[in-house]
View (cartoon, rainbow, N blue to C red):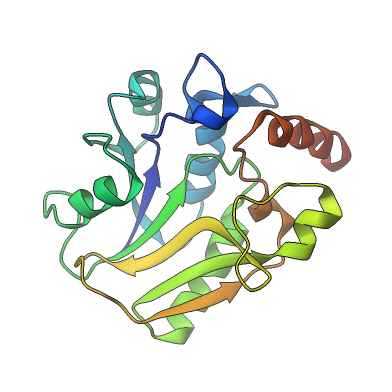
Length: 199
């Protein structure tokens, strides 16, 4: 069983908007809807959890239209909220495979999700971080939030639900869609330009 966990409880302060980050619209739809729909069509994903917090009440209400399980967190931070969920057997079994994914990847597709999971299961390691080469960010004019050894984390990770230290591999994807992690207004503007080229 593979469970997807969408982390949708952050304030999104870098966007400097007066509404919730997962609800920011890209091409007329809230960003989180693209992520949910991509996960729904994955051949691997059996269950979708959406982690919300007191910061994202509108998101919590919006996602009820989808076949997902809403998980209410304290909103103390990404790591704290993730740890609480992974240790809660109401939502995930011990050692269950969990794909954590951010809510601001509006161009991700089910094909890309399946590609990531193909690689995860082939590697036979408990954890995997998905990154994109930094040069792709430069090519498309996107500002990365963090670069480590020429790679940028995408916000997509695989791990087992046991809150233990896990042996991790890094999967380098060259899908530009994984680079469009919308964190700033500049990112949002770039995404609109990308849409025009894509469609």
